[in-house]
Image (cartoon, rainbow, N blue to C red; front, side, top):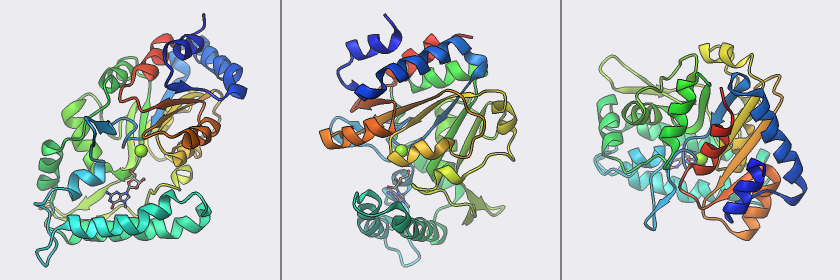
Amino acid sequence: MNLIKKILNENSHVHIHDDKRTYVEDIVQSLINDRRKMLHVVADFDFTLTIYEKNGIILPSTFGVIESNNRVKLPDGSLLAHKAEKLRSKYHPIEMDVQMDVSEKIPHMIEWWRTAQKLFVVSNLDKSLIRKLVEESTMELRKGVHEFIIDLLHSETPILIFSAGLGDVIEFFLEKEIPDFKHNHASSHIVSNFINYDNTGKLLSFNDRLIHTFNKNEHEISDTPYYQTILTRPNVILLGDSLGDVGMIGGMKNLKQILKIGYLNHSTPKKLEVYKNVYDIVICDDQTFDVPNAILKAIQE
Ligand code: MG7
Ligand code: MG
């Protein structure tokens, strides 16, 4: 039996659109035939590589790690958490609105990200406090992500983490969890919103090139060492949890086989229908990386 049939037989929470079944089986077979030397991986971070829900509690995103800690204060002594929550209650419904066009949402997203970034910059945060907050946080990799990334690094299969969250939080978190993962390296790289610090570690600003939910398709990585490595690798496994995450490969050229795996957190039948149209394989409310690991294992060196 082929791998996809086996995965579907054994996992009732894994879904593929009926019309795409053969197509997905063929893509996976091509990835297997082409082996590791043709492959690279692009993954979203928040709630794709990290756990969404544990024991009924939603775990923090990269923003949440910083915001939800009451040591982080604004100049007037108030909690950053309060202001951040106000922003979230205004903008998150716009992000999620299924009636509104993406083009209409984008100015609001830019406003949200830029306002949140300004609050970070004027708060009492510095580089060492951010490191501490990451250490204290309850953010957690999905079970099997460590194994997945170590497997990629050992076989020199490139992995790009592409996040609209906070790059610094990702970098500090991975230094602790997966020390072999190196940012801005030929076979591992993070594209995200990074902070510029002064020489005392105070926050100065964020990167000019903002990454939000709906512009992941506009980012090119041609000026990084990572880019050279993927030029000769036309096959990609994309991993995401938001609908905008499929845009992560938008700036990449000469791709051949593309397998899109989507984590649907907090699934409903209606969302599942939409996800099945956008992603090749949809994994519902599963806090493990068992399915991506099974596919990666089948693609040998
Ligand atoms: N997201 C975007 N912004 C914020 C923020 O300031 N605070 C919190 N808590 N969440 C934010 O990783 C990308 C996701 O982060 C959320 C500016 C958005 O919902 C986005 O999908
Ligand atoms: Mg995400």
